[in-house]
Image (cartoon, rainbow, N blue to C red):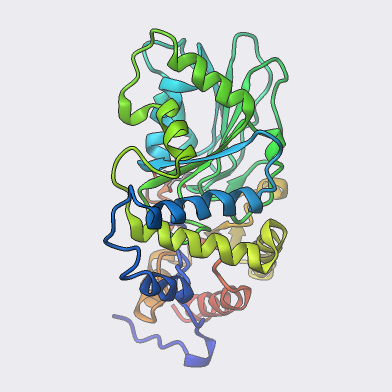
Length: 369
Ligand SMILES: Cc1ncc(COP(=O)(O)O)c(C=O)c1O
Protein backbone atom coordinates (compact mmCIF):
# COMPACT_ATOMS: atom_id res chain seq x y z
CA UNK A 1 0.00 0.00 0.00
CA UNK A 2 1.08 3.57 -0.61
CA UNK A 3 -0.51 6.76 0.59
CA UNK A 4 -0.94 8.25 -2.87
CA UNK A 5 -4.64 8.68 -3.58
CA UNK A 6 -5.61 9.60 -7.14
CA UNK A 7 -8.62 11.99 -7.22
CA UNK A 8 -11.68 10.12 -8.45
CA UNK A 9 -12.34 12.62 -11.24
CA UNK A 10 -8.97 11.79 -12.86
CA UNK A 11 -9.67 8.05 -13.09
CA UNK A 12 -10.70 6.42 -16.37
CA UNK A 13 -14.21 4.95 -16.50
CA UNK A 14 -12.70 1.53 -17.20
CA UNK A 15 -9.25 0.62 -15.86
CA UNK A 16 -8.38 -2.28 -18.19
CA UNK A 17 -5.44 -1.36 -20.44
CA UNK A 18 -3.82 -4.78 -20.88
CA UNK A 19 -2.13 -5.88 -24.07
CA UNK A 20 -4.04 -9.16 -24.01
CA UNK A 21 -6.21 -10.54 -22.67
CA UNK A 22 -7.71 -7.11 -22.90
CA UNK A 23 -10.82 -5.07 -22.31
CA UNK A 24 -14.13 -6.77 -23.12
CA UNK A 25 -17.08 -4.38 -23.61
CA UNK A 26 -20.09 -4.84 -21.37
CA UNK A 27 -22.37 -5.19 -24.40
CA UNK A 28 -20.49 -8.38 -25.28
CA UNK A 29 -21.59 -9.84 -21.93
CA UNK A 30 -25.19 -8.74 -22.55
CA UNK A 31 -25.10 -10.60 -25.86
CA UNK A 32 -23.63 -13.62 -24.05
CA UNK A 33 -26.49 -13.54 -21.55
CA UNK A 34 -28.99 -13.35 -24.40
CA UNK A 35 -27.45 -16.55 -25.74
CA UNK A 36 -27.39 -18.24 -22.33
CA UNK A 37 -30.13 -20.71 -23.08
CA UNK A 38 -30.22 -20.81 -26.86
CA UNK A 39 -26.54 -21.22 -27.71
CA UNK A 40 -24.28 -21.64 -24.67
CA UNK A 41 -24.37 -25.24 -23.52
CA UNK A 42 -25.64 -26.59 -26.84
CA UNK A 43 -23.89 -28.86 -29.33
CA UNK A 44 -21.25 -27.32 -31.58
CA UNK A 45 -22.40 -29.66 -34.34
CA UNK A 46 -25.90 -28.14 -34.43
CA UNK A 47 -27.16 -24.99 -36.21
CA UNK A 48 -27.06 -22.55 -33.27
CA UNK A 49 -23.29 -22.73 -32.75
CA UNK A 50 -22.59 -23.15 -36.44
CA UNK A 51 -24.54 -19.96 -37.14
CA UNK A 52 -22.31 -18.20 -34.61
CA UNK A 53 -19.16 -19.45 -36.37
CA UNK A 54 -20.68 -18.48 -39.72
CA UNK A 55 -21.47 -14.97 -38.46
CA UNK A 56 -17.87 -14.56 -37.27
CA UNK A 57 -16.46 -15.71 -40.62
CA UNK A 58 -18.78 -13.39 -42.54
CA UNK A 59 -18.16 -10.52 -40.15
CA UNK A 60 -14.38 -10.80 -40.57
CA UNK A 61 -14.81 -11.04 -44.35
CA UNK A 62 -16.84 -7.79 -44.28
CA UNK A 63 -14.43 -6.06 -41.92
CA UNK A 64 -11.49 -6.75 -44.25
CA UNK A 65 -13.49 -6.46 -47.51
CA UNK A 66 -11.92 -9.70 -48.65
CA UNK A 67 -10.58 -9.87 -52.18
CA UNK A 68 -11.98 -12.56 -54.50
CA UNK A 69 -11.14 -16.10 -53.40
CA UNK A 70 -9.89 -15.24 -49.89
CA UNK A 71 -11.44 -17.25 -47.03
CA UNK A 72 -11.67 -16.99 -43.25
CA UNK A 73 -10.48 -20.02 -41.27
CA UNK A 74 -11.12 -20.57 -37.58
CA UNK A 75 -9.77 -23.34 -35.34
CA UNK A 76 -8.80 -24.16 -31.79
CA UNK A 77 -5.38 -23.58 -30.27
CA UNK A 78 -4.59 -19.86 -30.53
CA UNK A 79 -1.82 -18.26 -32.59
CA UNK A 80 0.74 -20.45 -30.82
CA UNK A 81 -0.89 -23.52 -32.38
CA UNK A 82 -0.99 -21.74 -35.73
CA UNK A 83 2.83 -21.44 -35.70
CA UNK A 84 3.15 -25.21 -35.54
CA UNK A 85 0.33 -25.70 -38.05
CA UNK A 86 2.15 -23.36 -40.46
CA UNK A 87 5.40 -25.25 -40.08
CA UNK A 88 3.61 -28.50 -40.92
CA UNK A 89 1.22 -27.21 -43.55
CA UNK A 90 2.42 -23.95 -45.15
CA UNK A 91 6.22 -23.91 -45.30
CA UNK A 92 7.41 -26.06 -48.16
CA UNK A 93 11.18 -25.88 -47.68
CA UNK A 94 12.32 -22.69 -46.01
CA UNK A 95 10.85 -19.72 -44.19
CA UNK A 96 12.24 -16.23 -43.74
CA UNK A 97 11.12 -14.78 -40.43
CA UNK A 98 11.29 -11.29 -38.95
CA UNK A 99 12.24 -11.25 -35.28
CA UNK A 100 12.01 -8.03 -33.27
CA UNK A 101 10.53 -9.33 -30.06
CA UNK A 102 9.16 -12.34 -28.29
CA UNK A 103 6.41 -13.42 -30.67
CA UNK A 104 8.33 -13.16 -33.93
CA UNK A 105 11.01 -15.17 -32.11
CA UNK A 106 8.55 -17.93 -31.35
CA UNK A 107 7.65 -18.39 -34.99
CA UNK A 108 11.36 -18.45 -35.93
CA UNK A 109 11.87 -21.17 -33.33
CA UNK A 110 8.97 -23.25 -34.68
CA UNK A 111 10.40 -22.86 -38.20
CA UNK A 112 13.53 -24.76 -37.13
CA UNK A 113 11.56 -27.99 -37.65
CA UNK A 114 13.79 -30.89 -38.76
CA UNK A 115 11.96 -31.45 -42.08
CA UNK A 116 12.66 -27.87 -43.19
CA UNK A 117 15.84 -26.01 -44.08
CA UNK A 118 17.00 -23.72 -41.27
CA UNK A 119 15.01 -20.46 -41.43
CA UNK A 120 16.49 -17.22 -42.76
CA UNK A 121 16.02 -15.09 -39.63
CA UNK A 122 16.05 -11.29 -40.01
CA UNK A 123 16.54 -9.92 -36.54
CA UNK A 124 16.44 -6.47 -34.95
CA UNK A 125 16.78 -5.55 -31.31
CA UNK A 126 13.66 -5.07 -29.20
CA UNK A 127 12.27 -1.57 -29.70
CA UNK A 128 13.17 -1.52 -33.39
CA UNK A 129 11.84 -3.50 -36.36
CA UNK A 130 13.26 -6.04 -38.81
CA UNK A 131 11.92 -6.03 -42.36
CA UNK A 132 11.64 -8.99 -44.72
CA UNK A 133 13.39 -9.06 -48.11
CA UNK A 134 13.11 -11.31 -51.14
CA UNK A 135 15.65 -14.14 -50.93
CA UNK A 136 16.50 -17.22 -52.96
CA UNK A 137 14.87 -20.49 -51.86
CA UNK A 138 12.38 -18.94 -49.43
CA UNK A 139 8.73 -20.01 -49.84
CA UNK A 140 7.18 -18.39 -46.73
CA UNK A 141 7.93 -14.87 -45.47
CA UNK A 142 6.64 -14.45 -41.93
CA UNK A 143 6.43 -11.36 -39.75
CA UNK A 144 4.36 -10.04 -36.88
CA UNK A 145 2.26 -7.04 -37.92
CA UNK A 146 2.43 -5.67 -34.40
CA UNK A 147 5.01 -7.08 -31.96
CA UNK A 148 2.98 -7.06 -28.75
CA UNK A 149 6.00 -7.56 -26.51
CA UNK A 150 7.69 -4.31 -27.59
CA UNK A 151 5.07 -2.10 -29.26
CA UNK A 152 6.78 -2.07 -32.67
CA UNK A 153 4.57 -2.25 -35.76
CA UNK A 154 5.61 -2.72 -39.40
CA UNK A 155 3.92 -1.92 -42.71
CA UNK A 156 2.31 -4.91 -44.41
CA UNK A 157 3.22 -5.57 -48.01
CA UNK A 158 3.81 -8.65 -50.13
CA UNK A 159 7.51 -9.52 -49.98
CA UNK A 160 8.02 -11.45 -53.23
CA UNK A 161 5.86 -12.26 -56.22
CA UNK A 162 7.41 -15.58 -57.15
CA UNK A 163 4.79 -17.83 -55.56
CA UNK A 164 6.22 -17.45 -52.03
CA UNK A 165 3.62 -16.72 -49.34
CA UNK A 166 3.52 -13.60 -47.15
CA UNK A 167 2.30 -14.78 -43.72
CA UNK A 168 1.48 -12.21 -41.04
CA UNK A 169 0.93 -12.72 -37.32
CA UNK A 170 -1.75 -10.11 -36.74
CA UNK A 171 -2.68 -11.20 -33.22
CA UNK A 172 -2.54 -7.72 -31.70
CA UNK A 173 -3.08 -5.73 -34.93
CA UNK A 174 -6.16 -7.39 -36.39
CA UNK A 175 -9.35 -5.50 -35.67
CA UNK A 176 -7.38 -2.39 -34.71
CA UNK A 177 -5.03 -1.52 -37.57
CA UNK A 178 -5.85 -1.23 -41.27
CA UNK A 179 -4.26 -3.77 -43.57
CA UNK A 180 -4.60 -4.43 -47.28
CA UNK A 181 -5.32 -8.14 -47.23
CA UNK A 182 -4.39 -8.45 -50.92
CA UNK A 183 -0.78 -7.83 -49.79
CA UNK A 184 -0.87 -10.99 -47.65
CA UNK A 185 -1.48 -14.70 -48.15
CA UNK A 186 -2.18 -15.50 -44.53
CA UNK A 187 -3.23 -12.90 -41.95
CA UNK A 188 -3.75 -14.84 -38.72
CA UNK A 189 -4.60 -13.89 -35.15
CA UNK A 190 -5.92 -14.89 -31.77
CA UNK A 191 -9.05 -12.99 -30.69
CA UNK A 192 -8.13 -11.82 -27.16
CA UNK A 193 -6.80 -8.35 -28.18
CA UNK A 194 -8.83 -5.93 -30.35
CA UNK A 195 -11.54 -8.57 -30.71
CA UNK A 196 -12.13 -8.58 -26.95
CA UNK A 197 -12.65 -12.32 -26.72
CA UNK A 198 -10.87 -14.99 -24.70
CA UNK A 199 -7.78 -16.92 -25.78
CA UNK A 200 -7.84 -20.40 -27.27
CA UNK A 201 -8.90 -19.80 -30.89
CA UNK A 202 -6.99 -18.84 -34.00
CA UNK A 203 -8.43 -17.19 -37.09
CA UNK A 204 -6.70 -16.81 -40.44
CA UNK A 205 -7.60 -14.94 -43.61
CA UNK A 206 -6.07 -16.98 -46.42
CA UNK A 207 -5.50 -16.28 -50.10
CA UNK A 208 -6.22 -18.65 -52.98
CA UNK A 209 -2.46 -19.15 -53.27
CA UNK A 210 -2.23 -20.16 -49.60
CA UNK A 211 -5.19 -22.54 -50.04
CA UNK A 212 -3.41 -24.12 -52.98
CA UNK A 213 -0.24 -24.53 -50.89
CA UNK A 214 -2.17 -26.06 -47.99
CA UNK A 215 -3.80 -28.56 -50.33
CA UNK A 216 -0.55 -29.47 -52.04
CA UNK A 217 1.41 -30.09 -48.81
CA UNK A 218 -1.53 -32.05 -47.32
CA UNK A 219 -1.49 -34.32 -50.39
CA UNK A 220 2.27 -34.91 -50.10
CA UNK A 221 3.79 -37.65 -47.95
CA UNK A 222 4.67 -35.24 -45.11
CA UNK A 223 3.37 -36.41 -41.73
CA UNK A 224 0.93 -33.82 -40.30
CA UNK A 225 -0.73 -34.29 -36.88
CA UNK A 226 -4.49 -34.05 -37.22
CA UNK A 227 -4.90 -31.24 -34.68
CA UNK A 228 -2.37 -29.11 -36.61
CA UNK A 229 -3.65 -29.88 -40.09
CA UNK A 230 -4.51 -26.71 -42.01
CA UNK A 231 -6.30 -28.81 -44.64
CA UNK A 232 -8.58 -30.01 -41.85
CA UNK A 233 -9.08 -26.42 -40.70
CA UNK A 234 -10.09 -25.44 -44.24
CA UNK A 235 -12.61 -28.31 -44.48
CA UNK A 236 -14.10 -27.65 -41.05
CA UNK A 237 -14.19 -23.86 -41.40
CA UNK A 238 -16.10 -24.16 -44.66
CA UNK A 239 -18.72 -26.07 -42.65
CA UNK A 240 -18.66 -23.41 -39.88
CA UNK A 241 -17.28 -25.91 -37.38
CA UNK A 242 -14.05 -26.86 -35.61
CA UNK A 243 -12.27 -30.21 -35.39
CA UNK A 244 -12.84 -30.46 -31.65
CA UNK A 245 -15.07 -28.68 -29.16
CA UNK A 246 -14.68 -24.88 -29.19
CA UNK A 247 -15.23 -22.49 -26.28
CA UNK A 248 -18.71 -21.32 -27.28
CA UNK A 249 -18.67 -18.32 -24.91
CA UNK A 250 -15.48 -17.09 -26.62
CA UNK A 251 -17.17 -17.42 -30.00
CA UNK A 252 -20.05 -15.31 -28.69
CA UNK A 253 -17.74 -12.57 -27.36
CA UNK A 254 -15.93 -12.52 -30.69
CA UNK A 255 -19.10 -12.37 -32.77
CA UNK A 256 -20.43 -9.42 -30.73
CA UNK A 257 -17.21 -7.52 -31.19
CA UNK A 258 -16.91 -8.09 -34.94
CA UNK A 259 -20.55 -7.02 -35.38
CA UNK A 260 -19.91 -3.88 -33.30
CA UNK A 261 -16.85 -3.00 -35.38
CA UNK A 262 -18.77 -3.35 -38.63
CA UNK A 263 -21.71 -1.32 -37.28
CA UNK A 264 -19.39 1.48 -36.17
CA UNK A 265 -17.81 1.85 -39.60
CA UNK A 266 -15.53 -1.14 -40.04
CA UNK A 267 -11.77 -1.25 -40.20
CA UNK A 268 -11.37 2.46 -41.04
CA UNK A 269 -13.30 3.33 -37.90
CA UNK A 270 -11.32 1.10 -35.53
CA UNK A 271 -8.06 2.18 -37.15
CA UNK A 272 -8.94 5.85 -36.58
CA UNK A 273 -9.95 5.12 -32.98
CA UNK A 274 -6.75 3.28 -32.01
CA UNK A 275 -4.69 5.90 -33.86
CA UNK A 276 -6.38 8.66 -31.83
CA UNK A 277 -5.77 6.85 -28.52
CA UNK A 278 -2.13 6.12 -29.22
CA UNK A 279 -1.38 9.54 -30.78
CA UNK A 280 -2.65 11.20 -27.62
CA UNK A 281 -0.35 9.04 -25.53
CA UNK A 282 2.73 9.61 -27.72
CA UNK A 283 2.08 13.38 -27.56
CA UNK A 284 1.76 13.12 -23.78
CA UNK A 285 5.12 11.27 -23.66
CA UNK A 286 6.68 14.17 -25.60
CA UNK A 287 5.47 16.62 -22.96
CA UNK A 288 7.10 14.71 -20.04
CA UNK A 289 10.87 14.66 -19.87
CA UNK A 290 10.91 11.59 -17.60
CA UNK A 291 9.13 9.50 -20.25
CA UNK A 292 10.30 8.43 -23.72
CA UNK A 293 8.87 6.16 -26.40
CA UNK A 294 10.64 2.78 -26.27
CA UNK A 295 10.30 2.53 -30.08
CA UNK A 296 12.67 5.28 -31.21
CA UNK A 297 11.80 5.32 -34.92
CA UNK A 298 8.36 7.01 -35.22
CA UNK A 299 7.37 4.98 -38.29
CA UNK A 300 7.48 1.75 -36.27
CA UNK A 301 5.52 3.02 -33.25
CA UNK A 302 2.47 0.89 -32.66
CA UNK A 303 -1.01 2.39 -32.54
CA UNK A 304 -2.34 -0.50 -30.43
CA UNK A 305 0.46 -1.17 -27.91
CA UNK A 306 2.27 1.92 -26.60
CA UNK A 307 5.50 1.25 -24.69
CA UNK A 308 6.82 4.06 -22.48
CA UNK A 309 10.38 4.02 -21.12
CA UNK A 310 10.79 5.79 -17.80
CA UNK A 311 13.68 7.74 -16.40
CA UNK A 312 15.67 5.80 -13.75
CA UNK A 313 14.41 8.22 -11.12
CA UNK A 314 10.79 7.12 -11.72
CA UNK A 315 10.03 3.59 -10.56
CA UNK A 316 7.59 2.05 -13.05
CA UNK A 317 6.83 -0.81 -10.67
CA UNK A 318 5.61 1.62 -8.03
CA UNK A 319 3.45 3.47 -10.56
CA UNK A 320 1.74 0.27 -11.67
CA UNK A 321 1.26 -0.78 -8.03
CA UNK A 322 -0.47 2.50 -7.12
CA UNK A 323 -2.60 2.39 -10.27
CA UNK A 324 -3.64 -1.19 -9.50
CA UNK A 325 -4.90 -0.04 -6.09
CA UNK A 326 -7.14 2.32 -8.05
CA UNK A 327 -8.44 -0.34 -10.44
CA UNK A 328 -6.12 0.54 -13.34
CA UNK A 329 -4.54 -2.74 -14.39
CA UNK A 330 -2.08 -4.49 -16.71
CA UNK A 331 0.18 -1.68 -17.87
CA UNK A 332 3.27 -3.55 -16.68
CA UNK A 333 5.94 -4.05 -19.40
CA UNK A 334 6.38 -7.39 -21.14
CA UNK A 335 7.99 -9.47 -18.40
CA UNK A 336 11.03 -10.72 -20.33
CA UNK A 337 12.10 -7.24 -21.48
CA UNK A 338 13.06 -6.38 -17.92
CA UNK A 339 12.86 -2.62 -18.51
CA UNK A 340 11.67 0.28 -16.39
CA UNK A 341 8.72 0.69 -18.67
CA UNK A 342 4.94 0.90 -18.99
CA UNK A 343 2.98 -0.82 -21.77
CA UNK A 344 -0.52 0.36 -22.62
CA UNK A 345 -2.97 -1.52 -24.83
CA UNK A 346 -4.91 1.02 -26.92
CA UNK A 347 -7.09 -1.57 -28.60
CA UNK A 348 -10.44 -0.97 -30.29
CA UNK A 349 -12.53 -1.37 -27.12
CA UNK A 350 -10.57 1.30 -25.26
CA UNK A 351 -12.14 4.74 -25.33
CA UNK A 352 -9.59 7.45 -26.30
CA UNK A 353 -10.96 9.53 -23.38
CA UNK A 354 -9.94 6.73 -20.99
CA UNK A 355 -6.42 6.74 -22.44
CA UNK A 356 -6.21 10.50 -21.76
CA UNK A 357 -7.36 9.89 -18.17
CA UNK A 358 -4.83 7.10 -17.76
CA UNK A 359 -2.04 9.46 -18.86
CA UNK A 360 -3.19 12.03 -16.27
CA UNK A 361 -3.15 9.33 -13.57
CA UNK A 362 0.36 8.16 -14.51
CA UNK A 363 1.63 11.76 -14.30
CA UNK A 364 -0.20 12.35 -11.02
CA UNK A 365 1.48 9.33 -9.42
CA UNK A 366 4.92 9.83 -11.01
CA UNK A 367 5.10 13.39 -9.68
CA UNK A 368 4.31 12.22 -6.10
CA UNK A 369 6.54 9.14 -5.74
C1 LIG B 1 1.77 -11.01 -31.71
C2 LIG B 1 1.36 -12.25 -30.96
N1 LIG B 1 1.45 -13.43 -31.55
C3 LIG B 1 1.09 -14.57 -30.95
C4 LIG B 1 0.63 -14.57 -29.65
C5 LIG B 1 0.25 -15.86 -28.99
O1 LIG B 1 -1.14 -15.95 -28.92
P1 LIG B 1 -1.82 -17.11 -28.08
O2 LIG B 1 -1.43 -16.92 -26.65
O3 LIG B 1 -3.28 -16.92 -28.32
O4 LIG B 1 -1.33 -18.40 -28.62
C6 LIG B 1 0.51 -13.36 -28.97
C7 LIG B 1 0.03 -13.32 -27.59
O5 LIG B 1 0.06 -12.33 -26.92
C8 LIG B 1 0.89 -12.17 -29.64
O6 LIG B 1 0.79 -11.00 -29.04
